[in-house]
Amino acid sequence: MARTFVIGDMHGALRAVKQVIERIQLQPDDSLIFLGDYVDGWSESAQLIDYVLELQQQRPCIFIKGNHDAWCESWLMGETPDPVWLANGGQQTVNSYANTSSTLKARHIDFLNRMKLYYIDEEQRLFVHAGFTSMGGPVRERFEITLYWDRTLWEMAIAMNKHIKKDERIYPKRLLLFKEIYIGHTPTTNYNVETPMNACNVWNIDTGAAFYGKVSALDIDSKEFWQSDPVNELYPGETGRNK
Image (tube, rainbow, N blue to C red):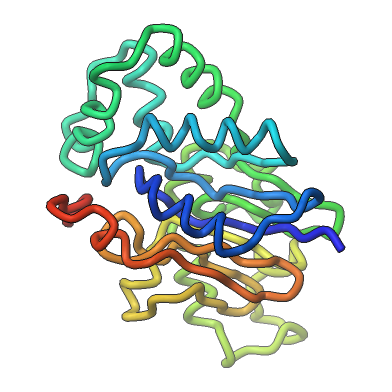
């Protein structure tokens, strides 16, 4: 039976991503959904993008755009790098492109340009990097940056979890729009949790790979998950974003 895996924030940790891909033992019909933040943090951002593009040649892949990817995209397209970006892992990404060709950069710009802001599957499951604020769902979101910057959806799910039932009037309308919602962006390690978290119908797959956490992959049907080793152990001598 074909499986679908959702993979959380990766932040340039190619070794961790390869480790997770090996551990889930991909079958020919399996598909992958990446929740964004391919870059910024560890030293192999450019190489990680090349790797996921190779995966796309072998199986169905969906690529969601994260806030760090949007920063990287702007820089690759010629904009002056945002100092906030450089201080939050962007410098490591710039360094990873130091010896790359203009052809590769153009290929990556095309990849970043084509990323989805969100994806909704046939079972009404939403995949988005951060969240959304519109009561009409992401399709009605006024500002696209909300989809890769918003944290209120996750904060709301955490606050509501186990306290209010779905059939109560005060249950958040946003959460009723989808069967399940899969996000990254807010590390579970912020809550002293090293594994994917579930609150209401929201699944958070960002397990802190930007810092000293892990890259995680979750089977969206069985909810079984696999993780890399702690990323800092795979990159000795590096500090990731370190903030």
